[in-house]
Structures are given as C-alpha cells and as structure tokens.
Length: 395
Image (cartoon, rainbow, N blue to C red; front, side, top):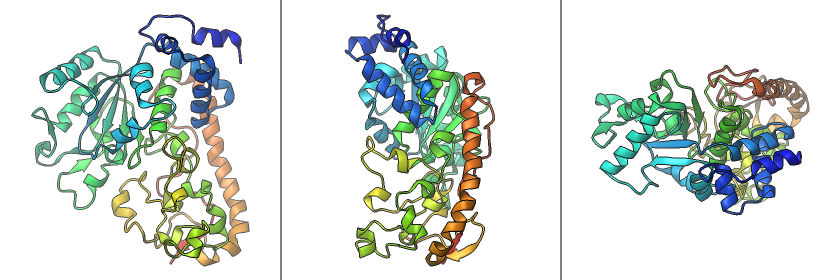
C-alpha cells in the first residue's frame, strides 16, 4: 500500500475530524487499514479501493447523523448498539456524530427537540429512520412531542443529504403493516420526496451493512448502487440460497424433517422446516451476525425471509415451507432436486454470472458516481424471485 497515503490518513490534524479522534485514541494505521479492507470487501469493491476508503473515512469532518424512531420495536437500535469493527462507541465518538437519537441521547423533552431543530437547520446530514410510519386517522397512531411521525419525517428529510431506512418496518412497513394493518403503516420511501432513499431491510438490520453504507457515502459522496427495491447490491444482490453452506444438502435431497432429528443434527437443509432462503435476498451467509459469530441457519434455525417486502404475510407460517418458490424453470419436488441438480447448476451459473457481471460493472463506475439518485447498473433479481439456479420446489 502507498506509504504516502498511509501517512496522510493518520497525520496530525484537527481534533474535530475523524483522523484527529483516531490519533488521539491511539488508533494505528494498521488497525485503520484493516477496518478499511473489511469494509471494502463487504462493499464488494476491488482491493485497490481500500486505501481510498481508509483515507475518506479518516479525513472527513464527522458526518452528522439524525436517527428517528417511529413504529418499531427498537430492534435496529439494539443491532446498532452491538456494532463490531467499529463498535458503537467508536461510531458515535469517532466516525459519525449522532446528534439526535431518542434512545441514546442524554437530553430529553424540550432540550431534545431543540437539538433536533438545530441539526435540521444546519442541513447536510444523513437521516436514519427506524420503524414504519402510520398514515391512517391523520397519523395519530404514532406521535413524538405532540406531532405525528409523518410530520417529523417530512421536516427532517428536507435538510438531509440522504435518507437511510434501517429495518424492514422502515423500508416496507414490516410487522405493523401486516394484514389487516389498522394503523395504515407504510415504509418511508413513498413519503420522502426529492431525496435519495436507501433501504436496509432486515428484522433487524445487520449493522455491518449500515456502517458499510456510511463508509461508501463518505468515500464516493453517493449511496451504493441499488436494486429495484432500493436495497444496496453489495448486501442484497444474492439469494441466501445461493450462498448457504447447506446448499449441497438441498441439491442432494437431504433435508431435516424435524428439529433435533438426525438430519438436523447433521446440518442438512432446513427447507422442509420452513427455510425461506430460496426466496430471500441477503448477505447473511457471508456477513453473519454479532461480529461474524453466527447466523440463524448456522444456528439451526430456518431463514424467515425478513429482508423481503410483506414478509410477515408472505413468508408465514415461519416453520412451514413455501408451497411453491416462484421463479424456477422446471417443477420438481424437493426430493427430486438432487437428480436434476447438475443440469440446473449449469444454467444457474450462466444467469448468476450475468447478474454478478452487472454488479461488477456498477462497481467500476463508482469513481464517476456523483449523483446519489443514479439508476442501478445491471439486471437485478426482484425480491422474492430467485435466480434460475435450481428447479421450482413444490409440495
């Protein structure tokens, strides 16, 4: 790595910049570049971008983040609090300035409202939104300080440089929007006009995807390339099924039939126990959770499809397999998949290569990315529609 770049990253500088904070806390260049390399890999960027990511993260003034919470369970905040590499303390004190977060901030009441108003007046911040927004009955089902969530969102979005919806509730409405949806809950995308919006669905969001998104914004002054549902390709560009370590058992027709049975203990495929991996786009198999410790399927629990729109209505009952996975070319029962796997995998490799080729093309165009609202480059599989890498699965 260029020593000039390395020296410039942690050179003595103003204490109010990220690099000044890092230097004051004794963070070494090695540690910084290790973090930057991890972020670069997570963003699916070539390794040559690592120095640029490190320099961008260290050199900028602290980006201001305002975090609003509406109809939610605080699960995304809990995920944020468990951030690793960097941890939440580093995020708040070093990389970003969280000027408003009702759960984390010290001020309350009028002081908290004034802090929010001051930040909105300055503008140029990243607005992170957790939870859905109720629209029924004038939005009275969620109010903060006597004002509706919808009005709070509208006011805060006006001065934002970009808006990030964290969690499935904020992205699509989530559980509050499940049928019959008495509060008229919706995701924030349709309520925010004139601002780039990026969705980071999940119940809750994986905080690594949030920190990577912020690092991408600091590096390229733009949000990452997105699919047709506003999700960044680096995190939601592949099916869980395509990267699942149990995929070989699926192709061989080896399934766990009950929790704790022999197949379950041997790590067989969880499709018959309700796994929605064949219909879910997410990087869970690669990134995992809790600092890469594990993830639901790794712990023996089926994927519930929580990164997909209307997952609570479409993917339940949780422990019952989907009667039909849309998007497959030939209809077979799960037991017959093994016999057809060879031919299907060849076809799947071609389709998957086209999709990934589009993503790599988008990455090559990042240097010229100056418009956060730019369209996604390359074809992307719609949510709930897997690539044609196996046959259709029926009961």
